[in-house]
Image 1 (spheres, rainbow, N blue to C red):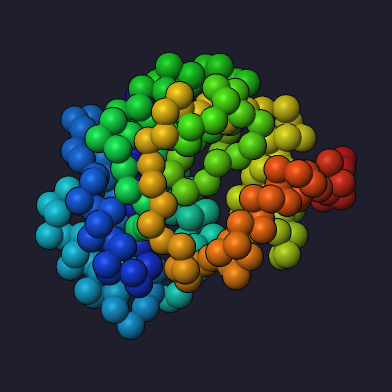
Image 2 (image 1 turned 90 degrees about the vertical axis):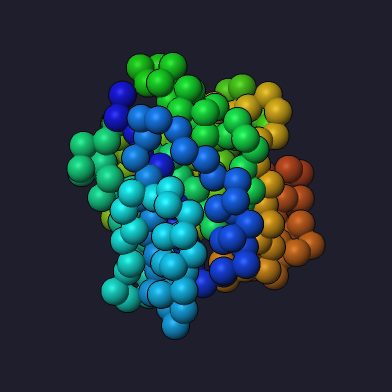
Length: 218
C-alpha cells in the first residue's frame, strides 16, 4: 500500500518546531510538506529542511488558508497515485506510536467501506464524528467527495462531518489518546474555541445540525 505523510504548515514557527520534534521516519512512507504563503515562508521552509525528514517541500505561491491548502494538497497526492495519506498540522504533538498506528489502521481497514477515515483521537472505535487535525484517509473515500457542494459558510471539517453522517460512515479512533493540540489561538481558531463553546454545542445540542443540510439532498 502506497501511503504519503503530508504536513501543512503556516506561519507558526514555535509550534512547528515542537511538532516536528515528535515526527518520526517510518520506512515505506513518503513525506511531503505544504507551506502556505506568508512573510516568513522561507523561515518555515528552513525549519522543515533542518529535520531532513521531508522528501518534498512545496511552498505555496499565494496565501491559501488552512482549508484550501488541505484540499489541494491531499488531492495532489492522490493524483500522484497514493492509496492513502496521513495528514499532519503544525500545531499538534504526536505520540511516538501515532504514525505507526495511522499506517497500520489504513492498511487493515483499506477494504472496510464502513470507515471513512482514521484518527488518533481517543474516542469510540467506530465514531460517527469526523476528527480533523491529525488523521488519515484513503483515495477512494476522498475521491467521492464533491467539494463544489460545500457552502461558503461551512468549514471543511464540518462539511466532512455532515458527509460521513449522511453516508452512515465512521471514523476509526484510537483506544488511547495519541495526539496533543498546542495551537489554541492560532490563525484558524475562533473566539468560541477558547471557551469550549463549540464542544458544548456539539455534545448537548447536536451542533452543527447535520441532518438539516440541504446541500446533501439529491
